[in-house]
View 1 (cartoon, one colour):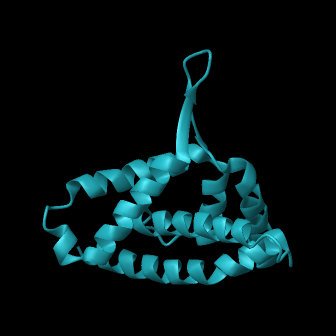
View 2 (spheres, rainbow, N blue to C red):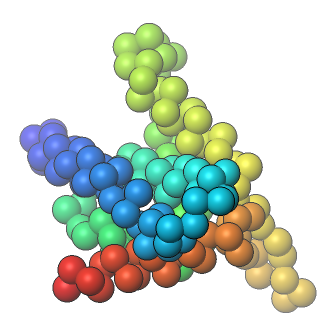
Length: 153
């Protein structure tokens, strides 16, 4: 139990750092384009949801930017993390909504968002592939994360 507390503290610090870089990453990806505010907000929302999923499922002290880059490069990884979140949600006792309503609401909203954002299709050989319905639009985020993480190495 002590190890979990240490991990959740570092995970919390990771989340704070991650949220702090959202605007930087979006600015790198879009430049100074102020004309498309809705698109910018959509990308920010997408990145924040990925960060919250990372915060709630990854208990390691790993590099947030590396993991985010992996998440944007590998939809199956994100789907696995979402399934891990769903497992946690299903394991919550019925009184969770009253004991920790903020966490409960966040998990519920994330689950719903990922249900709507991640779909799957079956290839001709029966292989199931997951994909982000916004994949075409969020390539900007993946590229920006790559630029951001390489600029600090």
